[in-house]
Image (cartoon, rainbow, N blue to C red; front, side, top):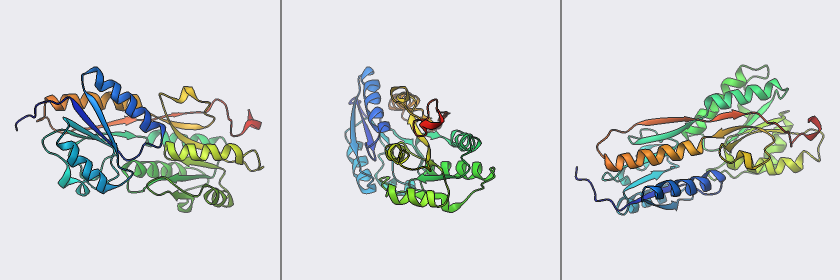
Length: 282
């Protein structure tokens, strides 16, 4: 294989930039590559597989490597458009059958611990709101949630699980009403976007109802100290993801023949110190 002359440019393909995770990922990754003389070009697909394919083709001709957070659930959806002359690294979730290096977040243990911790505090009925159930990350959260709930007195109930669309949009009012009607008093939100949506709504909702609802959510390890987060949460290892992605990309740019590898980064369960959603309990 003839190695392409370096242009010192890396492409980053994201499905969305609507949450803190994406914003900080771009900022930190751009700074990290700049230290090594590379510039980062970012594009957003807005959850379109067709757009992903288009950007893979375009970046294949103008960059030294591609990092991608893909909405594809099967590598076959992208296979024909993934360039073979430069390294491609999949971040955060792994499409089925993907032959490229993948850096994946593993939150099974943290989610399992968070559910059991909340149950031990008296929150016996815990609902789950998650995104596309075909994503590898969602499957892992679903498995952890199911296993944890099956070990509790409440047991596992399929109808306590709610799905959003790929853009993580849902009718908060109707979903919350249904959750409360079923007797659930805590919600596990499976992404930072869903967490923020519920957090903002519950801050008002819990002031106006005797039956307050708790939250287990997701946050960034690197930004959690900047906010007053009053809920148990899974802190995502953003800085570790950035550091490893930059390291692996630069290595593969220089060593294109090296085989693909899979890396797992674990999120950490963090218990609340101040319960803003239930101030009467502090």
